Image (cartoon, rainbow, N blue to C red; front, side, top):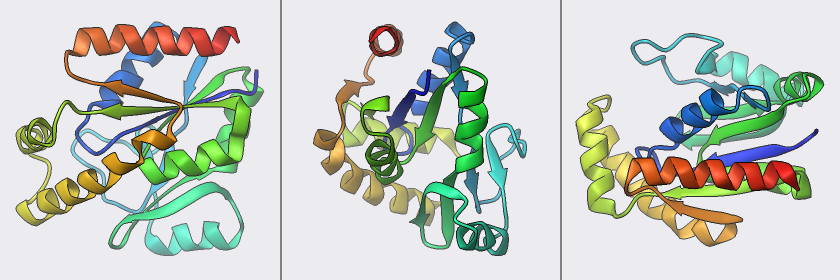
Length: 188
């Protein structure tokens, strides 16, 4: 089944919530692609579950080995990427690979996988609501919060390059719409 579902959104838009819901409701067909990052783990995050946490040196070593499908410095000094071996492992299990990636990473994956992929942009109802969500999340210090909001404004300009834009206003509706999009793509 070598297919890929790409979910991208500005930080705080709810893409991880949507992706986790899809993984719970369709475990027989979907598998999560664990990204690599150089950022430090947040509380309750585990290496090999949410991310593969690497040092900057380890990340650059993987780059030199051409080990990534895509990679990017998302924030100053913070790298993210998708390992080729991760995608190959999940396809070998007969699963559709589900990505939860930043906006530029999503576009890079879409370019790599072509018609094997469906790229879905999850959009917040407004920048104000996004700011509120990020503030309530309380995982960012003030300067990082400002950086994430500025990046979100930039990322919203890429939504028209995605196959589908899904607005996350009412979570229950968003989850139903995401399920329908995924089922439709898998049935193609």
